[in-house]
Length: 423
Image (tube, rainbow, N blue to C red):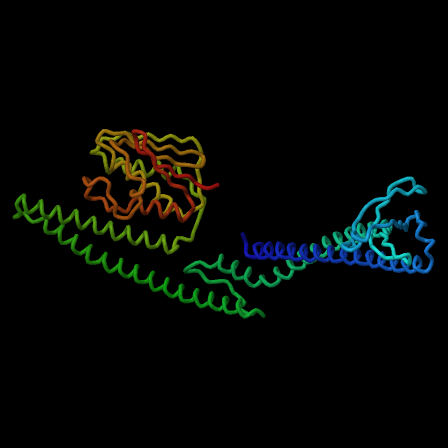
């Protein structure tokens, strides 16, 4: 989830809860105030009616039965002694309206001029109060919805404006490639933290570029410096092997040294290639067809390993292509096919299937390999192949990772390496 969306979502939830809590508190506060006003009105009616009764005792037998109604009945002194005034909601039947109306009821006790205790029941219509409460609720919900939408929308606009320097920095980071000129980045913004982050990104890019150049120069120089003495030693061994006075044992020792030297040369080239791949030095890409490279590699390696008496099968089921560096595409296929040839038993069979989006290399083999180890550098599943550097599959995986190519291994009596190219 993007930072802008995450921040906006959290702020929206917070606003929803705060406004909801405020609206609920406001609603019940208004309801309580309306109820208090109704009860105060009943208190005033009680004072007026009791005052009139004390002035005119004949009113004790009267009763108002309109909407604002009251009734009086005598009670015992014992009940009056513990009497508590109370308010509650109820309904009364109004004959003139022929229906029940909601009322607020108050019951109170007083002593008349005849020294008798009476209970006064007052009833006040709450039709207008209920209409008022409904109107308050309706407009409060409307206000809540409009206010919440406005706040969420305005917060989104403000956050988008605030995070714009961060978006520019992220886009800039996506375009930065080691060894390539970096696009311009304006580090100036009104927000101190983003200014600091922009400057840190620029400084980091400069340090990374410097380290990249130094590493690249070191690897190229080291490789070049190693190639020269290795070539000299190989040449001297070839001259030494041409001497006529050498016996068979000495020639065998020279041959072993020559093989070891060739392995060192190959190892130097492989390590240099791995370093160049991981440093992103292969930037040129073209649309590469896999089938021609498969045919060319099989033809070349079948001649080299002719003594193994292997049979080869190439099946083209589709025109698999990929946008990548052509030399790396050839290296990727060559390493996998060579791996299948080297680790096949003599007289075995190697198959290559080229599909529309995948290439599968299969070869015979007595047992499954460890999928967790086969792509590790210098891992050798078969110690019989001393000429192997243990880097072929590691290089293949590095190339596949560079171009988001899936590389899978499975065993079903035969070894299968499958390259799955992205669309």
